[in-house]
Amino acid sequence: MARAHVIETRGLTRRFGDVTAVDALDLTVERGEVVGLLGHNGAGKTTTVRLLNGVLAPSAGSARVLGFDPMHDGVALRRRCGVSTETPSVDERLSGRAGLRFFAEVFDVPPARVERRIDELLAAFDLSAAADQRVGTYSKGMRQRLTLARALLHEPELLFLDEPSSGLDPVAARAVDERIAGLRDAGTTVLLCTHNLAQAQGLCDRVVVLEHGAVVASGAPAALAAELGASIEVRVALRLEAGTDARALLADVVGVETIEAANGEANGLRFAASGDDATAAAVRVLVQAGADVYAVERRQPSLEDVYFALHRGERPAARADAPQGVPA
Amino acid sequence: MNVRAIRAIVVKDLSVLRHSKAVLIPLIVVPLVMLLILPALAALAPSLMNLPGASDLHALLEGMPDVMQARLAGLDDDQRIVVLMLTYLFAPMYLILPLMVASVIAADTFAGERERRTLEALIYTPTTDAELLLGKLLAGFLPALAVAWGGFVVYAVVANLAAWPTMGRVFFPTGMWFVLALWVAPAVAAVGLGATVIVSSKVSTFQEAYQIGGVVVLPIVLLVVGQAAGVVVLSTVFVAALGAVFWAIAAVLLTYGARTFRRGELMARA
Image 1: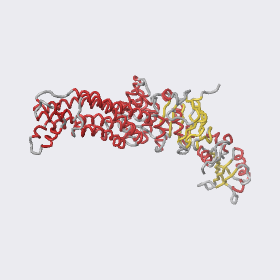
Image 2: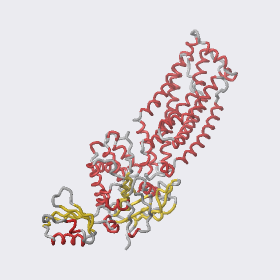
Image 3: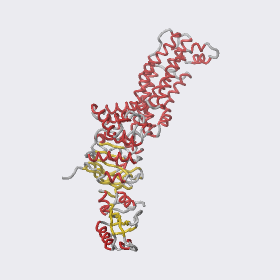
Image 4: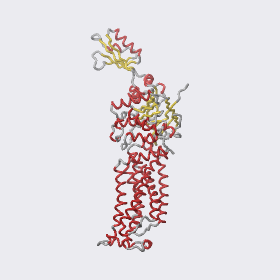
């Protein structure tokens, strides 16, 4: 049975004058998925969120979000979505609690539930102690957490998180990631716009990479790496007989390249392997040459590797028809 | 209409205002001057007239057109100057109050909201454009009305008390002032709101919106000058007609302003 698409766009396009911010976007997100929307600044991520919430009209194409047409059923749609905006967009002159109370009213949280829900979220985001202080006194991390709390007030089915860790220190960023992971585990569908690749790798089931408003790649990070042919980084800790050149030994192994001594290791070696077979072949050659191999460490290509491969203009085979001309 | 959301917007906008000196200071100082200090000074006018160099006040009285002279007939000189000032000359200045209150608040809730970058969160709420606009307009209109009507009562009390030694009776408010307060003042507030909504869509800060929107005070200044020069004589009919004109202008401004306050437009400019 086909899974329900929470988000489905066909050729969704938005132009601002001569600039195409979102270019024929085809995107599907299924219920319970966490999908990362990746791309440089200006790639079209925020415009996509605006189009999907019916706050900006498309120039062409169509979208269905939670079964609604965003432009025609925007009010009903936004009642079931939560948006954490890139800039916290919190009123500094109000207290955290007053700001949440306002949005609870606007999102029509049942009056009997408003204060309890606010208290729950303030506690969940470690803001209880500062709840009655003006937001102007909050740190950036606190504001970001308040923004997330606001997006969750009405328990939305679909959450749009636009750069939720933007400008945060590592500790605050990790706290935000943990909250998002909690939402994912609770089954909330999340569209996460970010250029924090580690965050996307850790949280997302799938990523969609945008460039100049168009999709240049999409899929699970590991699958994307496979499609792009990104290699495994292999580190070997070993001891070789004096005078033996490891690089020369591996030079002829098929699928092994970029062989170099591992930094900081007296007898270490690092190379790029096209896959597990190439890795095994390389280790076999080293052993046959009399090397004592103490450890072999394989590092799968990261989302960062994939992203930069895309940035260099490489494209997954499945997206061979994707727009070219990616800036170097 | 989502009344709960509209009420929440009004309450939120007014709560935010309470913490802004740039908004609060004019909202406190101007009514204080207009409603307390000016009528109290006007009550002192008769004693000032007896001082050397008070020929200007005499000249003002003498220079009034016949219509005005007829209205002041039967009063002594002291009473004439009190009635002229408190009932006629200050009447247009009273209109500055609702205009100023509406404009200052609208500048803060429209342009100020964008300046503070808090508008985007509001845009993503399940409200219609009309509900958002109505909530923000009411946040400016209701306080303007409260200041206008409350101010009318305060002005009446201060005028009668301060002028009691001269008048010896309750002479204020007149029928014209009831029309001014109940019909014209709301219209002027609506004009201020409409103008500020339009200006706010073109500028990016509260100060810009407030200063440019302040241009709408010019018709009122013309009324003040016109009366002092004897060119314009306020009457109940004139004031009622003036109110109708202001309502018509407000309708045009608010209709146009509503077109600038649409999610798509706001987000395209964001």
